[in-house]
Image (cartoon, rainbow, N blue to C red):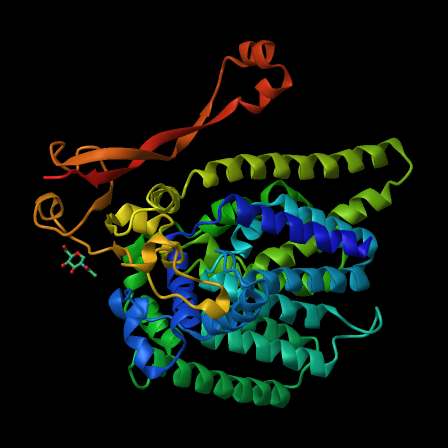
Length: 513
Ligand SMILES: *[C@@H]1O[C@H](CO)[C@@H](O)[C@H](O)[C@H]1NC(C)=O
């Protein structure tokens, strides 16, 4: 049973990655850092070739998470001798969820653990993003393990042991200092909780905080100063300085105060959030987890710029509460008509989540036209000895990552990354130079191919469209439900909600002059 649940988490998460294997711009720093670490290695002379030197972002990010993933991927890739777009951080992520599931089982019983698993996999955001190199998702495993430590206790009645609590504090400190500074808010609230219920003394807390803080700062400063070539550099600190102190994050857009509660949490937790209050009301242990989580979301609400990923760490906590709530809901009225009803409500909520997730997944599969465009270009011209392709901004931001530069160096035979036959003679060039005018591209350029953002980007005399890539435009609800069903039977129901697509990218080929 236990193994089945772990496998379920595994299978759902992999399905999401396999269905949408490409990545977006927010994930690209870590993805490219992993790419560069894997293929160039970390020696000083290799650093100049790294993507972050060629295209530095607005603010430096830490390499530490990427190094962990690259290191793990390196071994896995060597084993498989085959590098795919999927990386092993993903496995780490799944493992922490499985650990958490076990901790829930030990603490709250099998039924709660079963419900926790079902709730988690029925939702969209966490399973979908788990396999992706978003910094927040690199931080999530650390938060999950900390949560396990806080949950897991030998006996049901005893409190968290001092050792477990100290490790939890140390892990949260590490995650905050190195990967995502906002976790400091969660850490602070959990620390208050641990102090007030007497698990940790103030001296112990301060000691653990200072030691783990200094170790983490030492780690990130030494590693990131090296990779970014600036001394001293503490990426998360400069990010907070830039975004919060200088108020730059507001430039990314400001949302109303309650957005996390009114929009993002419902989107993350979906229908099953209705069970959270039941879990909260019935169990003191759940309250001790949920209070800091909600407090954290409240604190984060004071920042103008809001994104779901800034508060994603509370999802497992709130799912535990929801699972416990649903469990008590079913248990209490077992055997009666009301009990059957309660059971149906839980099943119905899970079914609603799953339906929405399937729809979202269909939409998001259409959301990476850049990845599809580059994959098609690679396939179409795989026998062509030399291609110099210009990749437009939209394509670069919607999936055209360095992992798709299959016909150009770097290669590493040790990882099974070899030049394709045609490219061996003269490597292709994937050129992402920004701000070129159409005339630059059409006439004064070395390009043989262009992935462009519109049909008329290039003069038809010299350039010919060879392929068009569609992408997501919107969802449309079909009103002719009866006709659909009468035509297609039950499959018609599936089509009631239609993913509408638009032409997004055009692949051009230069004609002989
Ligand atoms: C990419 O294109 C730009 C603009 O034509 C050109 O200046 C640059 O040299 C190209 N890069 C490579 C690696 O050929």
